[in-house]
Amino acid sequence: MRLGEVVVDVAPLRSSKDFRLVFATQAISMLGTHLTSVAASLQIYDLTGSSVQVGLMSLVLGMSLLVGLVVGGLLADRADRRRVVLVTRAVTAVVITGLAVNAALPDPHVWFVYVAAVLAGGVSGLGGPAMMAATPSLVPPGQLAAAGALTTLTAQLGGMVGPSLAGVIAAGPGIAWCFAIDAAIYVVGLALLAPLPGMPPEGAAQEQHPLKAMAEGLRFLRGNQVVAGLLLIDVCAVVFAMPYALFPELGTEHFGGGPSTVGLLYTAPAVGSFCGALASGWTGRVHHTGRALIGAVVVWGVAITCFGLSPNLGTALVFLALAGLGDTASEILRRALLQHYTPDRLQGRVGSLWLAQATAGPSVGNLEAGLVARALGSSAGAAAVGGLVCLAGVATVALAVPGLRRATLHGPPATEVQPATAEAPSTAAD
Image (cartoon, rainbow, N blue to C red):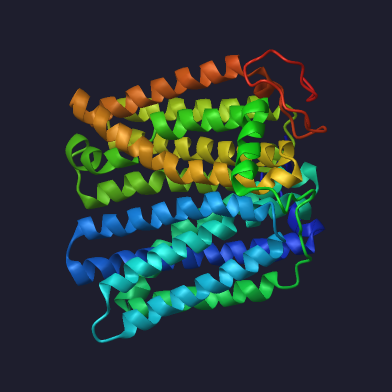
């Protein structure tokens, strides 16, 4: 395999001017998102001196984001997606500007930060499905995996650079500047996205009742083997084998380190994910996409199991990096298959369910990991057990959903729903 077939595929950037605009917007937006996230946490802690308050703000933000995603999925299938994205981003820019003004006051208001978290989370959720649903209309089907890889690359880069930059800015010019820079980034993003053409959903049911519209999305999810299978296999990874909540105890007790050791544990998966995104060129070329997805989640499960069994910190970091690599490959392939096998009129609703699962799943997984660690009396043991349960779940899904094994990006998607548990014929090439 040539180097050009391994490194991230930039074909969507070469072939689509509109995707270049979206990519540039996402790249700078991910940086700004981390500036605001870290700055809000720092401000809450500075004002209250309570980590509980910081956690509560994160919970409020996450819940409002979840609600926004569900409603945003309906909106993305009923209205022009370009307009939804522009309006929600404009409103978010106003909210973050308010955070900057509040932070610049002699006595900033804690309540305003909470209100802003609710507004920003909800409005961002409203626009998220529309942005995701727009991608299939900007690039051809054969480039969906490459587009997803580029999107993932911006997220990982923002996750690596953003928090550190936020700390530097907060310690220097001040927290208000973090918010102000993010607000400016949103304005730049609006200017970049404004030239995009209108993107009304195909076959939009303007008069359909919202509850019926959501029920239609759920029926499609239940009936399409590929989409149902890729969501189920993601549950196996994020619910059963999510070890992040165990890092503080593992870093200080199991590996005998301190905060720096805990920081290394959190950094290792991000490094692996970034490397995985850089080396993602193969994801758009592999023929048996469904089998590759299953293999990527297996890599995650094996790596987490070995992480839990690691005898020293160095070995643990290697396996966490490997887990991040598998997670990135899985995310790229899942996103591409989801967009390829979902009709345009349902892109918003189905995409919102995927985004909602990506938001809530890790939280549930971290809670489950903590409970298992308490029951076993060992965080390392909980990580190993979680990895094994993940592998068992992946095997079950792979056997029960044959359509997922046959799924491919190189061919027309199945347009008719199929029972998710039946050995029905698939239009995808085997």
